[in-house]
Length: 268
Ligand code: 13P
Image (cartoon, rainbow, N blue to C red; front, top):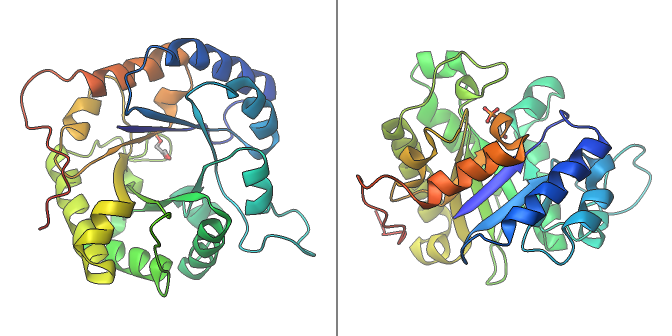
């Protein structure tokens, strides 16, 4: 189970380090197979890297540039992220697509650079409220995924995480509507179909994980992580406090018995 914390720009450096230290203490007790990834701001990364060193916690960045070196004032190289022990990088988050006008083409270039550098991209895709109301959801998922992955090969050592994050379900700036497990299941099946189209079922099974993000909290997380096609969650607000984030992880790991927990990536 993958639990990725996106702290966005909500914590300063000291708060980020304190939260990372609190998470390190509790992460000792997490069962094997649980991968917890902390994604602080760029400025906090080196400090959080020091705080999580030697623990099972993983580090991720919230973005990176599509070149590794050169005259690109203000940008952050994926190679530098690797130097800081980052293993993951969130790419194409809807907040970047909206506020920084990030395009599908730019997300594609960033994803290629991330893979080339040995980072695991957490590629965010998802429709906004208007697109959902206009029955454009499938179209948006197909467009964003195909554009990001066009011409990209996934070798045996590459890993890709696709995060389905419907913009309307994100707690801040969202609509207050929560996605239902059925909607998330449907979207993850669309994603699986596209990946199988692009790479085949074997690569899907070997290299690709699908997570859900959007108002995930301790009460609803199990309804998502029990879905047969999901591998985990991408958490915003509920990851900003150690006790709450641990409650999310613990509820995902110990769901109330109801639905199946088969995550075998069965071919559809
Ligand atoms: P929330 O969990 O606050 O809805 O944020 C989701 C998100 O955008 C994670 O990337």
